[in-house]
Amino acid sequence: MSYLQLLKALKKENAEKERISKLIEEAEEVSKATQGAEKAEKAEKAPFLKPTGAVSSCYAHPFPDAIEGLGRRHVEALSSCANCETGTWSFYGPWPLCLRCANLGRSG
Picture 1 (spheres, rainbow, N blue to C red):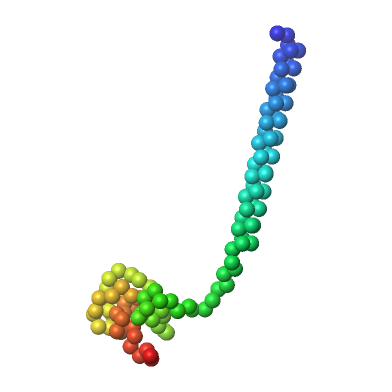
Picture 2 (picture 1 turned 120 degrees about the horizontal axis):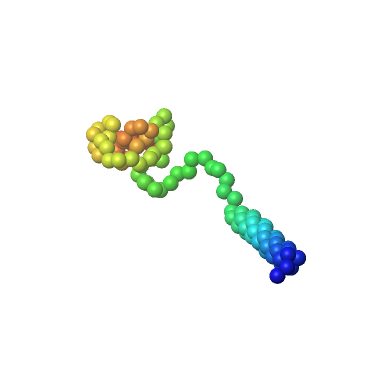
């Protein structure tokens, strides 16, 4: 094989590699565009969630969702009520409160 034939074969091989890399780049661009379009489509179909004020839940029904001055209810490890020493998982701010103490002073 002559030097000229080797050079032609090398050029042909390089041209093929360039063509393949261009095809791969185009496929990646199409994939990215398709993913973006799918995300946009899903976003259009999804309902808009508007932030609302405090919503009353029935998650722990007899317990109030929040106590003014203490904060919202959350759950932590079983502890003694800060007021009467009864066991409870319900916390308002840093204080554990049992059902009876959480409802003290609550009307209706």
